[in-house]
Length: 127
Image 1 (cartoon, rainbow, N blue to C red):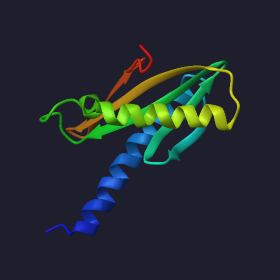
Image 2 (image 1 turned 90 degrees about the vertical axis):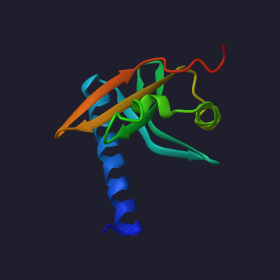
Image 3 (image 1 turned 135 degrees about the vertical axis):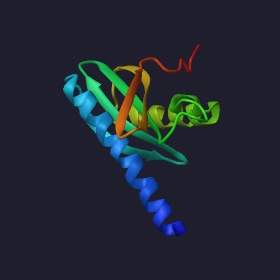
């Protein structure tokens, strides 16, 4: 039987593998990775990437099954609000004059394969 510590380690490694895949995806699209796991108060932005004047906050969600729903459906309004707050801090902290977009990279690992879904403009926090 798996212990709580082993389960937490495997969950962490699973999430890290998805984040690594997302980072590789954006690098392959000629984005520059500015930050990984940027923290502000209770918020954490998995990836902050930039291409030209476009800054993208990326939330990475991974599941071992889609049985309970696709990973992107697990980004709740409270988490979106925290992401907006964190990105506001980041832009002000580094005095950036950029356009901002929020994306989700969703992964499901099934039958030994990673299934990737990239959702651009996943939320419109200011509309």
